[in-house]
Image 1 (tube, rainbow, N blue to C red):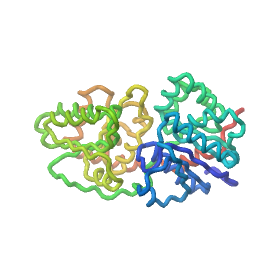
Image 2: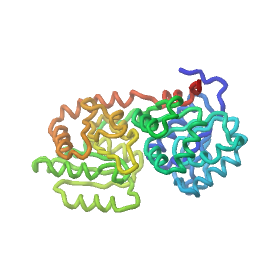
Image 3: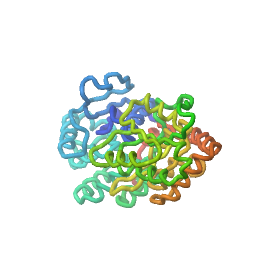
Amino acid sequence: MVNHSEKLPLFILTHEFFPKRGGIATFTEEMAIAAHKLGYKVEIWAPVVKLGDAKLEQNWPFKVRWIPLKGTHDLSCQFKMARHMIKERRRLRHSIVYLPEPGPVLAMSYLHFFKAFKPAQLLITFHGTEILRFASRPIARFLVSKLIKKADTITTPSRFSNKLLYQYFPFSQHKTRITPCALRTNIQNPPTKEKSLPDKIVILTVGRLHPRKGHTYVIEALKQLPHNLLNQIEYWIVGPERRGKYGKHLQQSANQVDFGIRFFGKISDEELSNCYRKADIFAMTSINHGKSVEGFGLVYLEASAFALPIIAHDVGGAPEAVLHEKTGLLVPPENSQALTKAFYRLITDKQLRNQLGTNGLAWAKHHSWQDSANILLSPPPSKD
C-alpha cells in the first residue's frame, strides 16, 4: 500500500455522475468513495440535476458541487466546465485534478496551454470509446495528445483499453496504469437468489438500449433453440431507451418470437437487484459498433456478484470481466450458431449454471475500488 502522506485536495471533474447509472458514472462515484477512504479531501464537480431528484437523499462522504450544464460533450458543456475551471484556477493549481471521462478532458485540453491552469497533479482515465473518437478527429487528437503529454498519470480500466490507448497515443505508455473496475459498494453483499418463475429460465440483459449492447443477437440466437425449450424461457431487458429507432426495433422483434420478452426500462437499484435475484442467466452480447466499444463491462461483475452465469461476446474488455468456461461462456461475435449453442448449454444444464455462478461470485470480489484508487493516486511514474 502506497503511503499517501501530506495528501493534496482531490478534485474530480465529470459529466457522468449520479443520478446517471452507467459504467463511467459508477466508476467515478466509486473512485471518489475509495479516495476518501484513503484519506483524501475529495470534491466532485458534476452536472446539476433537477430539484427534487434523488441526489438530495444521497449522503456521500465527499463534497459534490453541482455545475449548471447538461452533461453532454458538446461545445456548450465544454465551455461551461472550462469557465468553472477558470474561476477556481487558484484552488486547482494547488490540488490533484482527476478527469475520469471525456467531457472534462475536452475542456481541459484547451486550458492546459496556459500555465495558470496547471494543477499540482493531473490524472486522466480513458475507458475505450472516447479513444477512438478523439483519434478520428484531427483537432481533438492534437489537443488530447498535448494534454496526455502534460498529464502526470493516465489510467484505463482494462488491458484492452490500455492497448487501444497505446495504439492511437503511443507516447502515453510510460505513464499509463490499469485501474480495474470492481463491484458497486451497495451490492458488495447481494441478497439471496429468489426464484419467482419456477417454470421458466429467465435470461437477463442490463444496459441502455443501444445497438452496441447486442440485444438483437440474444433474440436471434434464442429464436434458433428447439421449440420445446422456447416454452421454458423468458427474456428480460432492463435499461433506458435512448434516442433512435433501436428500441422500436427491439419491440417489433419481441412481437415476432415464440417466447416471452419483457422490457423493464429504467429502474431503481433496488428493482435491479430484484431482477438479478430472479434471473437464471445473464447475457450481454456487446459488439464493436462504429467507434463505440466495450472497454470493460462493469455490469458483468455485477451479474457475477448475484451468482449468475454469463454469456457474452468475446470482444473489447469483456474477456477481462468474464472468464471463459469459469464464470461464463464467451462466444465469437456474429456467430449465431455458437451463441445459440451457448444458450442451449446453460438452459439445459443446471449444474453448469450453478458452477459458473459460484465461480463468478468469488471472481466478482477479486478487485476492490480502494486498490484501484491506490493505483491511481500513488506517485506519478518517473519521466526518465
